[in-house]
Image 1: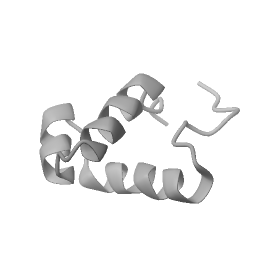
Image 2: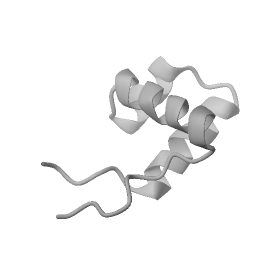
Image 3: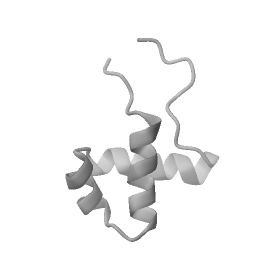
Length: 58
């Protein structure tokens, strides 16, 4: 299983979208899928956080 995206990247993406960037633009700029962005936004809405799961084993 690949390592999760860094919290720093997640923060940059979420902040860019909060400032008006579309998900498609953010996806292209940061090189991640729109689905990943949607998952982060959903997690933020549901839990208030978009950090990777605790206890992730490398």
